[in-house]
Length: 556
Ligand code: C2E
Ligand code: CA
Ligand code: CA
Image 1 (spheres, rainbow, N blue to C red):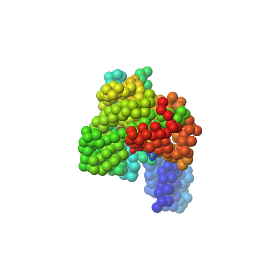
Image 2: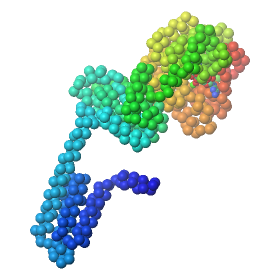
Image 3: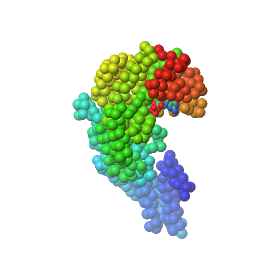
């Protein structure tokens, strides 16, 4: 079974299938000639069997093929073949010449007919399956290609690309130029990595394409890069045009094996991305159940109560400057004194809270608490300068009043914004990168410094770093844990540090637990480190005690 398949595949992908077909037609002619010879010669009606290979050749190679086969057939049945093989009577010149002429007329006529039919079918297909203005494959074609892909057990993503600002582009370049621009845009898409497959035009601003799963190692990373790539300016008639892009994605066979359903899901995902004001969304069946499950709703209700009842507490963990042994800042890490479940770390609740607007209230509480704590630190340890870092999520940045509110709280508490740092994860920042860059710039204008948290985990390309208005990069703890275990992780740390330094950014290693890791980081010139090796996260009281009792790490 396997062998047969292999042979079939080899035949299918034989580079020169033309040679194969011509040989087959030639063989067929030889066989028929032999048959005619055996049955008595050209006097008999079997001669007409030669029309079969001639018409076949005309079908495959049109006029050229028909003529060539007619010539070969004519020669075989002409000068080389007697009229009667029993009596060995040869045929006259006029006789075989006339037959060959007839073959050639039929060969060229059927060749012409086939090529005419082909062009007609092509024309009809074009009208049915292609967008008239741009010549791109349309929704009907996409559906039928999807069906074929599913039939062949395809494992793929269906991506719908929406150009959000297409009306602006339309106005800018005018109606007559629009389809030329779209062709250029589609070419731009095709230049991205693995995209060799069809790109379908669904309407003026929506385009579809499929990506085979085996072509991408990390799909989220692929999407991030893809969005950034699509939003690059396209030069059109000396005007730089920017596309604002949203992607909606569905997955086959996981989410559906019906073409219509997949298309629907991608559209729903597109809607969801737009609603969340992020660049892409991957459709998930269980999404709704997860978001609105009873236990999650319960947790949200309890978080709400606990904010008013002050059941949260901030723990702190120092970041150490590896050159000077100074404490650069303390990171605030939230803890929950749950009325029933006791002491909870954020992995038990923060991702649930981040999915709801409650994260706004929780971050508000963190800001106020951190600012108040900063004043307590100053008073208790008499340090001139202590810096605190708080973690925020993408949803916080989306709040229009976030920056103003933050500055207001700091002012009320008498805290200098230069003493506050914000940590935001690389993955969250990338979701709506353009908008987020603007917001971060505003924060930085007030003197607030930014850490890019969990760097490396989201696999964003290092090249985007230079566009991000951040001050520090925190290498994700996963890489630090892999030091002396995994060589590739060490190489990644090496390149992150070099790249960051080339861009004038400072590097923090998180989750440093032992001397080996610390030595490795020191050798590579890492600037700051944080982790159990120096201090575990602890309550304010514990941290104050730690500062007073350690004579190695100093306050600025
Ligand atoms: P993160 O910002 O990456 O914080 C680092 C986590 O690693 C913390 O977990 C910290 O306790 C832990 N850690 C520190 N040093 C070491 C070490 O040497 N080894 C190991 N194995 N772990 C270490 P934690 O406190 O459970 O926080 C988990 C995550 O929750 C944080 O990850 C952060 O993303 C989030 N989070 C914490 N507090 C807040 C908050 O106030 N607001 C928001 N939005 N998120 C928060
Ligand atoms: Ca953090
Ligand atoms: Ca982190």
